[in-house]
Image (cartoon, rainbow, N blue to C red; front, top):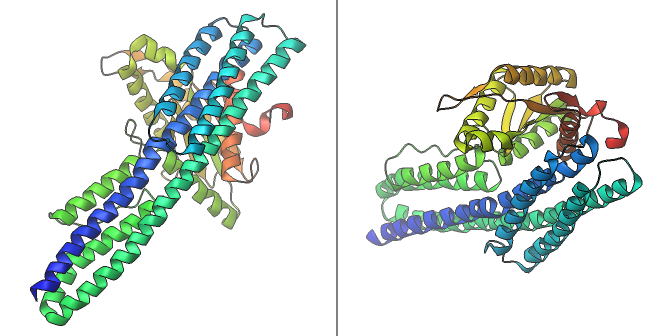
Length: 407
């Protein structure tokens, strides 16, 4: 009787360790490879702004801003190029190619900012070539992103295979124990098999990208501790640790779900993309802790203007996104204007008692009116945000109002 029980205990321990290792590999890949690549793409797009603004607005401060953006972008490239997380030959090849495009773009941006900000053919040619370099660099990074996503999917497949094999093993061992002693089998079924099944279900849901799922296992033993560990790992991917709102990864999952639901029922789903104006000046003037307080303040102001069904997420840095299910673009722009006006009239108060005045630019788009897919909806809202930025900041702009040449 003790042999099958001992085999069951060893099998339980091995299964638990194998499942956790599989999930940890998925989480590690997403945290150490996916996030830095998307952050670098964001830095490239930010670096593209000062030369454009310089030729449009003619402000000399764009040179300093470009130097800061260029420094941050180059530092991010160096971290990725020296990171051991990107060991695949294709990943390193694409990173190196993107870096070359960036260096060319950086030199072009410096040349543009050294010229007189007048509208002429030469400035237009340089700006077009500069934007093309930035675009090629981000496109190459998209290929890196896809390689990492493919690697993550392989880990997920491996996790599902582990589940299948280990479940088969546990069933065999359980039947052996049940044959020896029915009472021992019933006891083990309640104390071991059910917690393992709950953990296995959690592994599958997490590996499929559902970071909102939680393993419900009210126990104080090792299984309960393991469930708490898995839930904590999922929470790190579902929520932004600074503001407590949804993370970028969870935003993408929810948006895809809402677009599919909109397609099924024929209803609009609107999206707002928001970016704090001159946020770097807040960090430089008041310090990064005050900047963190300001981001939390933006979250609180935005949440007051939203319904319980609306989704607020941090897209990265000082950028936020809002999903408004079953909402027309007109109603969405009213929400955007309420958020903009409230933030402009309510300065943030830091933990040191400092009052920080903030403004925000907001772009809006709607599915299916402005975009036929979730990815294109994001792109449309981003273009609308860019329109709000280039037209003076501290304002809202809808995608359908943009000049056709800029769409």
